[in-house]
Length: 221
Length: 155
Image (cartoon, rainbow over all chains, first blue to last red; front, top):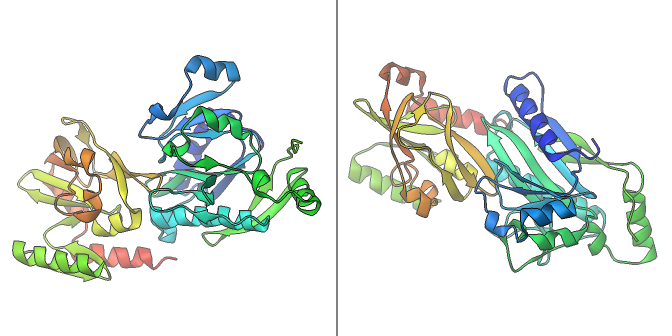
């Protein structure tokens, strides 16, 4: 879908959730990026935002409060976002199993590029490479229909994470696929191929086939 | 899981409540159930509401419960609050319509009670029921058990 303003994506998801609830549409997946955006979850943990609104404005970032689970996070260019709008009831999945599958999706994606990622320990939902978080999850489930979803760091500017306590976890870092791939010509070349130009990856999630489109992004040197 | 079921049986026999065991999730007699996995215990026109053992098991550890204000209206089938677990917020719907007369403040300190004691200490709200006829729209324990089996068998 390209780069979508955060509030626009919320409006779209609300409509899709409503349509999914009445079966106007079937399970749907949104694949997109956001411009510089910080978001908070239902618990409104604003103490994890470390800079004032005035500075946010200066750097050109937006801050939004949402109804999703999870703590504070950052979204920006070169971060792959997926918002599945699915009926969990129809496939008999609970929140825990659904989130596990979102984690597995990111772990699988990382492994396709030679990065060994794993799910977090209890209470640290998300996808990690060692002590560094590469993928975050924040979901809302309403009448069994999901919205929001996952954010996977392909190559965002990780400096933006310094303005927050990411996901409320103070003693661990963040990372990206770019940072974790071994710098060697062959691997770098592989990563270039993925990030430059349109790329399609097929994955299985919840038994439904879907396609990730990496948007055309310029690999920063 | 097995020890929890054993504890539930012991608690149930102490309280003289019959317990259906469906797999590892407990369904209590004398309660009514909604298709979004909430239970309601009615005494006259006073109702106590929570989420079922099946629901808490599928959610994972609850870290936060969003409670309504006392005095708020609730409508059968509509959301009155939410729980958060594994970075997912899930709506909780009311099985009956009426007015909230009490909320379980203990959940602000110990949201995990929803997991450890879904039918007792983990109760969420108490409601003054408008129309007890509405209870006919809910499932009895056997119906709920069958409903859960069907839903879990769907994948």
